[in-house]
Length: 326
Image (cartoon, rainbow, N blue to C red; front, side, top):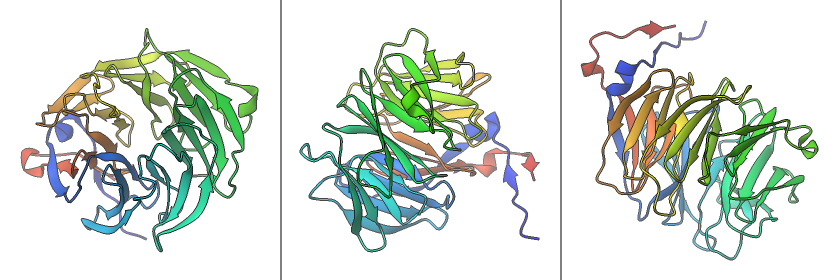
């Protein structure tokens, strides 16, 4: 018998008590991307405008490694199945290749050439060795991390946001007020569902599935956060934050149970909602750009990224009693 994993249930009260428990500084620019590893969930990787890629162990509160990408810059970063290998997009305006980087020895394992303009969305499928990339060149490319050439191409009309579900069976592509659902094995047949997202005409920023695959969230530049039933396409909830006026990204994230959402906002604040009942909390900020937000998988912690990295945890002193789930 291994140790019992005991965790607090994520209630509205727990959410309201969340506060910054740990801050990592040392950035000379804004954080442009963050990703937790899906299985080794204490590992977090960040990319920053200061052209650095940083690997953290959030459980032990240490920055394990900093790698600089001065030649190519770095904008988006995500883990592969292996926590020592990351995929990242460049930010130099002349080379739109994606790169597979070994954090162990700071070595490029592979280049993925195909996009002709800035890559604005990446999603890695942890169950297989596949990933998606969406670009301002109005294409979504499908890749196998073992091959340099793309395995498929989808043409889109607008800035695409892309995401696999957790099982890697389906993926979603959002642009132009619609979400297109594809079967990952038969994507060339086109979408099997197309969901209209309200009267949304603003450009899509981030799309994500809840961990059980039943819900999708979509953020837009206009400051809207939509929650949609991934099977039927009906709207479950829609929230408004301040619009994004800079080139920043409006990011939102599901809690592990899919019942709460955290989001950045154009005015720098962080919002939290209960999907069923609405707004739970808002944490203000002196920042005037939307922070990036990521919930740590299977954990009672989320992180925000601005010009520093903050880890948010419940303030147990504010919680008289809490329910324990085994």
